[in-house]
Image 1 (cartoon, rainbow, N blue to C red):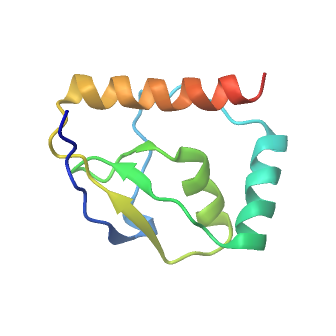
Image 2 (image 1 turned 45 degrees about the vertical axis):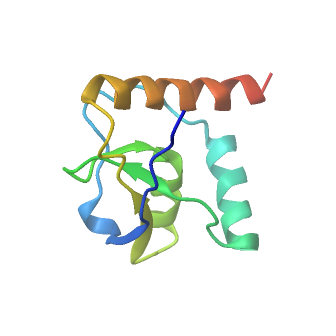
Length: 102
């Protein structure tokens, strides 16, 4: 299976949004842990966003980055994925995070 290479671009954080269909809520404890990690280590990940700048994976990170006053965020855009594949990816990404808490 061949994997696509995705370029990282830095996007003005105020241009990024959360899709209206995003249902996952993060607890205050999760946000606090993520905030502490970013303050300690910096943000070492990327957000996954579509062409409309809607974040499909990394919504909690976006929230924390905004709260911490970041101006830009690293973003990849998986242009090779269809809308259905992008939704499936976001669900799988969230499921992995939930499974890690068990």
